Length: 185
Image (cartoon, rainbow, N blue to C red; front, side, top):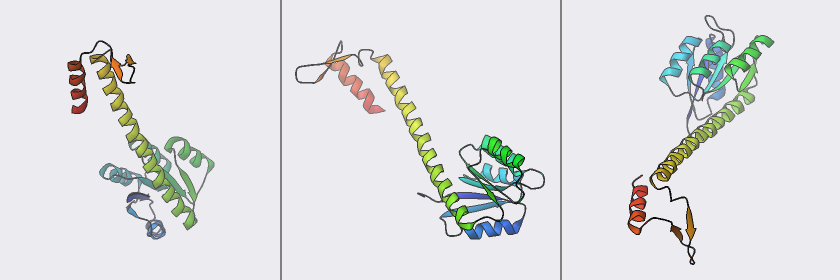
């Protein structure tokens, strides 16, 4: 893990939150907690959260419904579900609607939870880096498109006997102006 990540724990049972905090205490993570889905959504709105671990059975809002809303509103957050009452329907709903990364049954294995959180933080970083690279590629594509519109002969080039690119139809002054524009970006 490259930086401190934020993990949100959502469970209506305070002792579960405390137990998970103890399991994760040696990781370089900031831990936030909520006792229900609405409180969890509020925390997501006010904080950059990288990983969410939610219980399924909670009053007011099921964990699978909370995770589905979290996915819709904060799609880059990695989502996990923890439940003591696994039903196939709840698990399918969580996977399909909340796009959960991992599903844990209570009682959980501490090492599995620690490794899953580490893995989820790493996945968040990789996906964030990919989003950044995609944005950079789009910016560069736009710059190339702008250059092609301003200088249509730029991409149609030949090389002289020394291997230097000869820009057809462009004077030395136009090349200098073009290079100046490129340097300004």
